[in-house]
Length: 129
Ligand SMILES: [Zn+2]
Image (cartoon, rainbow, N blue to C red):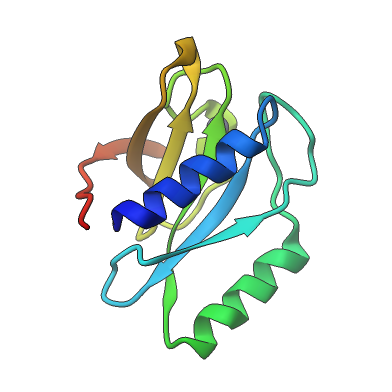
């Protein structure tokens, strides 16, 4: 993932504090090259729900750029960067990178997971310039 994209994601999540923020990632060849802010229809510090209208707008925007969805992100304003039980239950794309941005203990941390068969596996990701 590009450093600039990661910074945009962190900024978006910070703007929406104390609520959870969410968005999609897209790119070519499985690289996360762009982020798409999605409005959360739940204004909550412990959950989010993507505005499906914005999701379909983002998906057609990706198509226009010959990109595909490569992942998604959401924030945990005060919880550790680990997928919650609901996060795992609600996500069904084993190919997508699942990023969580945590602001727990006033520290920003980012972790990436793959969610396969209702299990979360942490994966490494690379930040490039
Ligand atoms: Zn979560």
